[in-house]
Length: 570
Image (cartoon, rainbow, N blue to C red; front, side, top):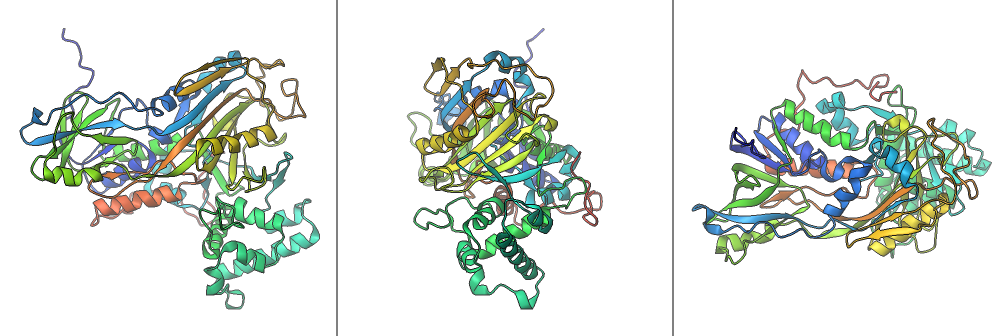
């Protein structure tokens, strides 16, 4: 019997659209195009969905990061004479991650449960109950493939390890014992003004001049003290940079945008019947979002092929126009449009001299320049940072940990009730925008030093791409089977949870592009997906300007917001 080929042929061989990479923006576009009756082929070289938006078993995360941290071997040399009509442009992955550091401080325990951890590659991420991603999930029916739970609370942290609750309603303001009477009155007056403005009440309308001014100036004008300003700017409006220092602020928030963010936060609270807070997290991790849209696309006829590398692009010899792709199996597949994952770069065949039309179009075949970096950290502990709480968000405003900290740092703690870790353990996701790897490391280390007991490593293995440290803690780590909310023998050192495992890495913030060849963006440094969804919508509209983005049909079953949706699972 003949051996079964590793790459069975794809039929048909011509499509309207080929999407390479199952990251979130590409998956949304594939689903939208399939809904618009386009024939779509969605390919991913990985054996899983989600690409850089995926959630992976702990044992698989280091190899995934490593495979995207160094320049791979040059792609198989392809000659322009291999086809009489087309030139072949090689397609290779480019480095995305750097300064990867994977540390295990209790290797026996971690190895025992490694397959029970599902870790987000691009964490921390949450959904606001009323944001664009939730609206898109509901409008497209992708909610059939996802379940959510509510994030319990949001806190603001400081350098002493304190976690201060962020009051998100009038009732919460009155109950908050950390606020003085004057602070409560000022905050109530501010929220009343914002609510009146949003309700279009003329006597409390915020002026156009104020709306175009920096949000921090408006808060100062309202007489809000530094503590309250910090809560509003960084824990509700989610500003990334120090808004008080225009010299380092990479994104000065205008009052209009700040008010819009407050409106989103307010609309998110209590929207769903069984989600009391403003934030949601998907059961089984953030990778479920890309999979949901892939399933939506498949229902509409999209063809999916995983474990399928693409070795080259086919371009017309005479015009330099894109025609199709050559798969690693050697099969040529043709399409009118192509969308690339941003991790790919195009290379010329060795020794070839491109034709003038192709030479002119080569600059459009590769993604745009990077726009900085985001540093990400993942920590595993056996004790919650808050003894009475499992899932919550912590924001460290600029300058809250050390004087040189110019960006916000965000931390999300997730427990086993979200099916991402074993009972009795917790996963912490940390991220911050940074200019370089050294700055990023300093930001993550400042958080872990403040909140956790980090045992010193005694053994280490390193390579050019990944440093793997294995250490034995100086204390015994007990194998608990029930989720614990209090400190115990495994958590010495001022009652701080002890770090069992960690990952730290920097990620390039590559922009997508809409040009001769389209590409999607990498995960950004934001807490939610709104900007990424905007990028996906823009890209879809550019390639299919005459088609509606996910047209609503009578068969679509959208939840009603009337008295609060029952969207998240409890």
